[in-house]
Length: 242
Image (cartoon, rainbow, N blue to C red; front, side, top):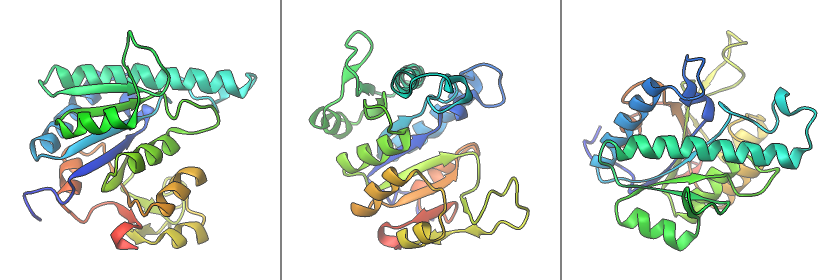
């Protein structure tokens, strides 16, 4: 494995639930510390990093909590939850001396900069970590779709999806003890096997633009650095592997 990164620019997708860890709190300072440590090692390799983070630790529009709500305001609440997470992660990175900008798809100038592609690309080129908040700014679209969209807009080399599992399986490994681990797949294999890597809209964007998706366990300290250095961990869909 090379000590250098195999990628120049990455888009990292993190779930909101991952920020909570095992804590009953919405955001665990222990998890934040681990995430920022991992991100610092990658930034030190010279990798340009964009991040999309979900809001499921605070509120999810499709959750049981929102079952009696109209989908549009419920999704708006979910978008605001992603802003809270983005601000928290941004602050944690700044406290480590890492330059960072939080860009929101919904304008809220007192909290973060409004997103434009030009501005985001400039921040990345200047060596700043860019955290994209508020999803796509539209209801009915998930943060997976936001990650795919921002990855394409930023000309990222890969979409890294940090999860709580080791990669992609033929079925849910927590339910099916015979679930098969799938290390390398084409876009067509994911569709034909109906594997839930991401939602269909997100996956269609990646497939259409040949953006590889690498799913790995972000909860293991150091895995992010290993992935960008080319270690054979996790599962890869499409891109140069297709």
